[in-house]
Length: 141
Image (cartoon, rainbow, N blue to C red; front, side, top):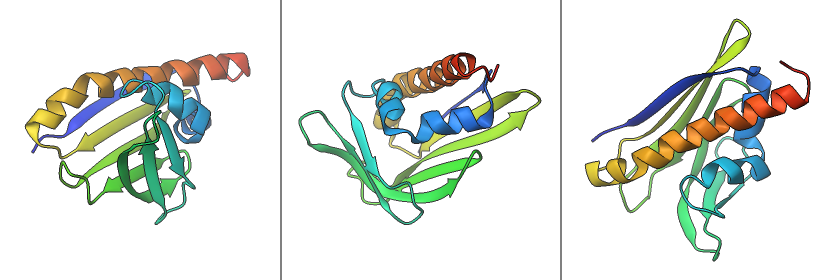
């Protein structure tokens, strides 16, 4: 089953990228690539649940935070998803004065991977935009 993978360099420090990945209001902005108005419910503690909620309150995905290493690694596992078990992994690497973000989702059945790949790419571009804009506003770049 396929994985959806994206990576790019961001002109912002790892701390700013991490903030975009873990601040609920900012998550809502980049996660709108999947569904406008979607929100996340989690404590961001390893072993704790994560739930993605649609604007009408319906749960879109429910899993577990399985890695939380600030400014390095964030991983959610969805073991009981109707599409089959899959993970979302955000890997952050500092490269000189920039940050490399790799975002992987899967494995997913091909029909689900195809349906999500455009939104996946849009989400990582929005993460980049939010982190760079914030870094510029805060004088970090």
